[in-house]
Length: 212
Image 1 (cartoon, one colour):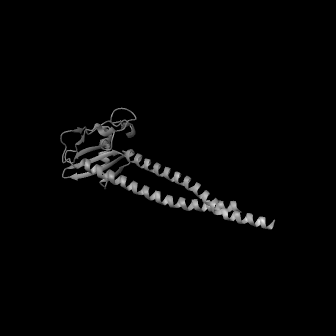
Image 2 (cartoon, one colour):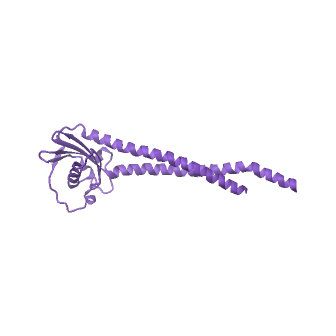
Image 3 (cartoon, helix red, strand yellow):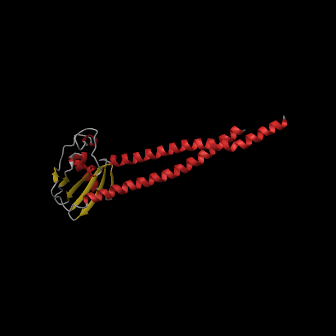
C-alpha cells in the first residue's frame, strides 16, 4: 500500500512539473526564435543601409553563368577550406545591388560569403519575385532582405543554415536544461514521497505492535 502511495505521488508530481517546464521552456524557445529572426532582419538592414549605390569594393556579376551544378554544390567556404565557415555573422551576409534599368547585378566583395556568382544571381531573381522584403528563398536556401530606392534594389543574403544552427543550439540547450531539471526533480520527488510516507509507516508499525 505504501509503495503504491509513493509511486502515485512521484508520478503525479513529475507530471505536473514536466508540464510546467514544457510550457516555460517552450515559451522561452518561441521568444528566442522570434528574437533570432528579428535580429537577423535588423543586421541585414544595417549591412545594406549605408550604401546608396555601388561604389568602391563592388564588382559586377556576369548576367549569365552556366548552370551545370546543383545549388547546394555551388556553395564554397569563404576561406576556400572545407568545413571552415566564415568567422562571424557579418562575413556570412553579402550585399548585392540590382539596377532595374540595366539589369546589372553588383556585389560587395567579401569573398561572396561562401557563395558563388551563380547562386547569387539565382537568389536575386528569386527575391525579386517575392512580395515581402524579408524572408527565406526556398530554392536558393538563403535568407534575404530587400530595400528599393528609385532604380536600385539593395539586397542582403545569408545562408539559412546559419540561423537554423543558432536555433538548433538554443533548442539543444533548452532540452538539456529540461532533462537535467526532470532528473533532479525526480530524485527530490522520491525523497519527498519517502518522507511523507514515514508517519504512515510508523503508525502501521505501532498498530502491529499493539495488536501483537
